[in-house]
Image 1 (cartoon, rainbow, N blue to C red):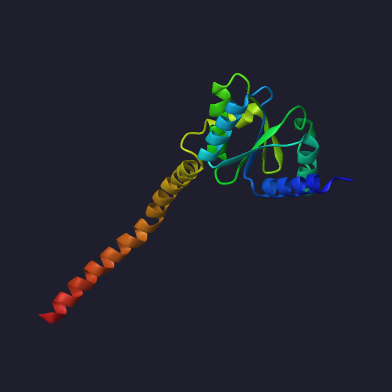
Image 2: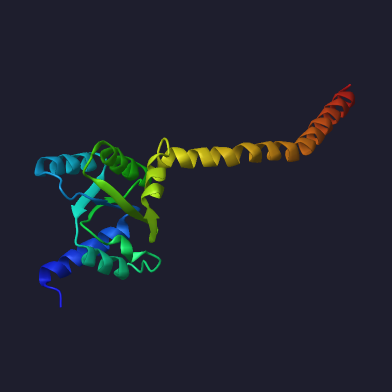
Length: 178
């Protein structure tokens, strides 16, 4: 039976995992207090919530969020978790930037959409240029360009017919006025 403090921690983690667009697990064992405060500061600046959590509590919170496809083997060793609530790419970039510069902090894995991400997949998300909004804009642009061309090709015959009919109407209208 969990204590009241653990039950509250499980509830807090359950809510955060449910709200998060991405959760990135890192190992910070051996990090000094000064470096840990620096890490938290950088995560806050990137709008990423960072906390240390017990693996058992994280596993229970993931089960409560019905993350059935999640590989629970990621919950081993000392674990800190970075929750990204807005932009998956920005959160991954913040964590990747810090782990790339640190010799102690190690990227373990991630959770996206209730599925386990490997450390390589998290790094891949972090390397997407421009972030989530720019990627969406590029996809829309890629789709919109050919669609507008097709629309122009389909509407051209009708438009040309309208021009011919208008020209003939102008001719006939001009002849009857004389």
